[in-house]
Image 1 (cartoon, one colour):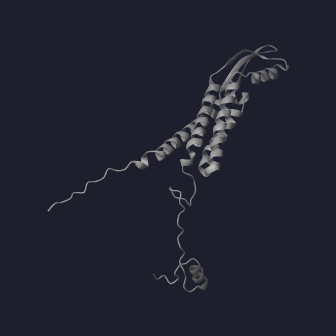
Image 2 (cartoon, one colour):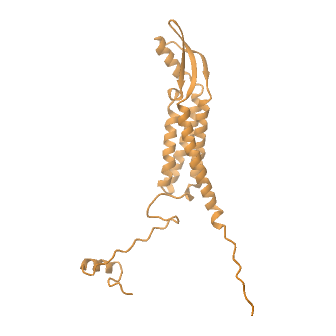
Image 3 (cartoon, rainbow, N blue to C red):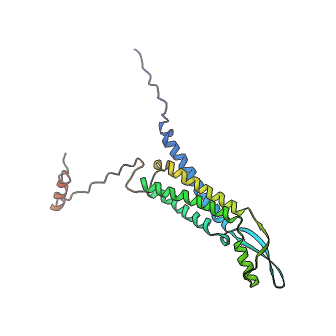
Amino acid sequence: MEYVTAVPHPRTEAADTGPNRTGRRSLGVALLFGAVGAAVALLASRQEWCSGVAAVAGGRLPLTAKGSDVTGVPAALAIVGLAALVAVFAVRRVGRVLVAALLALSGAGAVAAAVLGAGDSSALDEKAATAAGDASTTIDALSHTAWPYVAAGGGALLLIAGILAVVYGAAWPSMGGRYERSGAPRARKAKAVDPDRPEDLWKALDRGEDPTGTA
């Protein structure tokens, strides 16, 4: 008598390759880049971007300007981008594409505003005019820090997160209590029929159920 030994089949890796795996990777990268980018842009906006010296009565006054003094755009767009990153999971189809595009545009706008603000001295000139009491007073010995470019780097991370959301967002999961991972709606549990209540019997008949509970 011959005995046939069942040979276990190797575990299929179809679920871990292809679009599913790419979707999970892109989701993780987008979440990481989006969160870090927003945090970096917000942090950099609170740091010193430029400094200089103003000639005032009685001497020379050193002045500094933070990123928020120069421009509030990178910080504002970082908050918008972070909100869009969260909202991506609350919408589907066209709505998801639009929110992902908003995320990408927020990052691009933050980069542009930070780069333009890197050489802007208007905030220091205003402080110098206020300190001297003369609107024509300007700043001297102007110098800039690297923080504007750090803010631009944060915006670039937001931009990358937005691009990933636009390209791969359709494969990402979405929030919703009535949907399983597969996207199919959960089956509603049938309510128990009270035989002493005629209205329950009629409702069960309308649903195509057997109110008696027999097969």
